[in-house]
Amino acid sequence: MMLSQADLHELSGLELRPAISVLMPTHHAGPDIRQDPIRLKNLLRHVERQLDERGLSTSEIARLTGPAHDLLDDRAFWRHAEEGLAVYAAPNFFRAYRSPQPFRERAMVTERFHVTQLFPLISEDRRFYVLALSQNDVRLIEATRTAATQVDLGELPKSLSEALLTEAPGQELQHHVVSAVGGSRAAMFHGHGPGLENRKDEIRQFFHQLDRGLHPFLTDRQAPLVVAGVDYLLPLYREANTHPRLLAEGIHGNPEGDSPASLGARAWNIVRRHLKEADEGAALDRYQQLAGSGRVSADLPTVLRAAHEGRVAHLFLTTDVERWGTFEPDSGAVTLREGPGAAVEDLLNVAAIHAFRRGAPVHVLDRPRVPGGGDLAAICRY
Image (cartoon, rainbow, N blue to C red):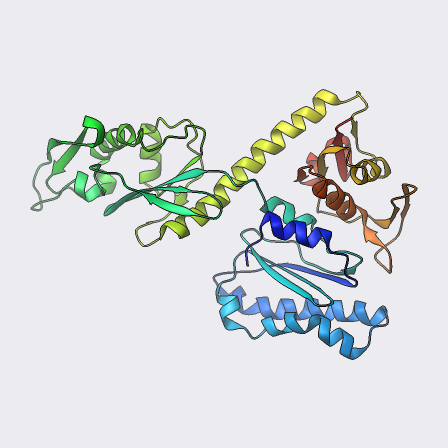
């Protein structure tokens, strides 16, 4: 299961105890695939020790961790692994989420689910485009986070082969012009050269024609565009492109066998990172603009109280560390502890949950990028 914003709302709002959170990196290729179930098994043993220390019986522990243990021998589950896995369990509750980015390894039994590493995975659902380029296939896909539809390009050439037609070996290239959509004209080529890699001038000319022909279909000029293709095609298309939101990162490899849904999902991971970086940059700039105004803080108790009261507009934090302690919402009292324990929580996680559930974006940053020089900081609404 892939995580959605609704899933994060559910996880962050549940008050089921004990709350088990297991996060780990996973692999979808290579020899490490076989080690991932073993890694999960070891993390579950760590969870079971924590549950035993809390006084739970053997049968209670088995009921809580049983669904996670069932994953260990589920070959179909591991065949579809991505870069990370998050498992959450509580009385009468179990969820497992795959992630396109790796998680730092964690196995916790706390008062609520530990969700700070999940925030980079969610973003507002926005429209974007995928342009898939290959020798035998040119496709435009309009997509969102959850849907992808191939666009009918009318009379535009459907492939590079159609635009760069080949005939007998050794023949010189010639070209003629055919009508394209909207009355534009696309260059068509005949002959055989040493390969598409060595026909850059012809490909460039075709890409300029394709770019012009795509204008009527790329109706949202603010929607990001991701190009998919083999490595030598991507820079050539970027030279020809005039869409203002073409992203620097593309999908590398021949996309011919990929469905619109598959290309949309791969492109969404690129779009999500792009949106995240843009949103983070704007929020960090805003923090600096408000420095000294009383509307920003990097003090943990101050930020916790503001998050609980719904006054946080943007929250910044790191997942490199945890800050264990207790927070009393009624009094705002914060007590720091050495490590986890009964009624002790990661206060960074608590701040993130309060801020998120009251409508504030949560920006997860490497520790040196967190403003104020600490582990968390906030811009307040007032």
